[in-house]
Length: 281
Image (cartoon, rainbow, N blue to C red; front, side, top):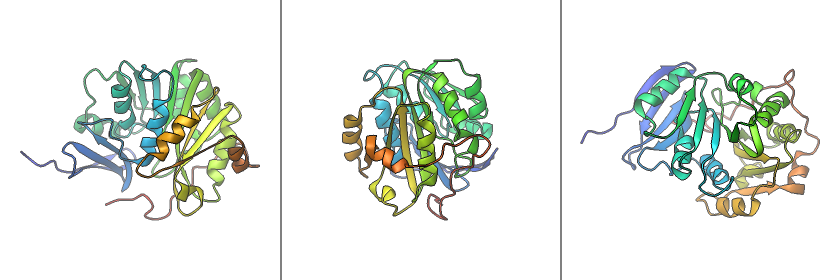
């Protein structure tokens, strides 16, 4: 049997590499310019290697009726980790994936094709432009995991963007976002203030070391116009190999404090991670 070999290719926004995992026969790590973007196991799509992906998966698990299909939008495609996960855990789901890097999407389609019947449509356009053209109340869940390099683009951080997310989600729908920040959390706090302009319910999920300001790391937000299942999320993230905390309610309001709402005219990208914070290889 031939050994899988790494693949490297120039894509629209850098150099993408697919590197096989020596411990899992058909598992791959995708990086762009050295920054990890996705991990997928083609034989076991429910295996979520990255902790932030696992936390996003937990939120998806408690959204709507257990196991029922969802109409899902994914802003940021990467190697399609979560679309593959939803296709297995919620058969019959209809999924739209928006990936601005057409070269990256082509690389993934060639080397890590989606399984037949996954019902995933890929759009190679800017995430906000696609969102602004999407129909009202057309999605049950929206997952935002968009990084230009190692930063969330500025135009996906504003109240105008949040207004579009709220318009596209159905009543009771859930928006999930993967962000990255460090103490004093000016970016994440401003994002919480911004989503609060349209969504009444919000939870934040992160590792205790990140929340205590000990290191730069991923922070997952989940927002909705209905109550989220905080007890179920708390149990799920506490049982992970790297346990996380769920912050909500008064504690989260205190964390946000007087952080400003972000508008299109003043928006900036998320902070650059410290050198080596996420890079591999």
